[in-house]
Length: 143
Image (cartoon, rainbow, N blue to C red):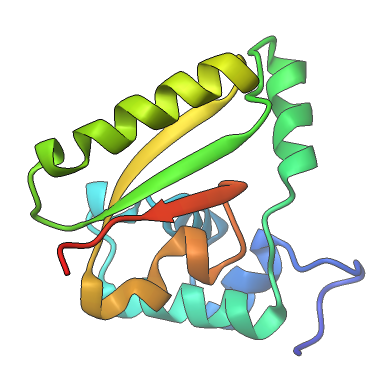
């Protein structure tokens, strides 16, 4: 594991330095918003590799604190449903309905996230490869 600047936990600054990019780019990649602004695949890979090398993990407690400070209600838990890219949402509709109902009953302030993944690149999915933007994930598959 590489050295981090003064802290025990790696920061966006540490990742940016190692990846040779900006902290803003690191944030976009780790929050899976990089494709919306046209960050190259090479830059994305450099950021993910740097994050893995440094042992970066998302601090869900810090995320909740930021939500609280901003006045927004932080989700109690965040559950992701990951489906293969290009598949119709209808194939996972029953799972989405069941997850929504279960979360509403057991964790009313929970958040459900639905994201696509490339089946041949699942290990690179930001929520799975860089410790987590969510507490748990359900993977759907066509096979």
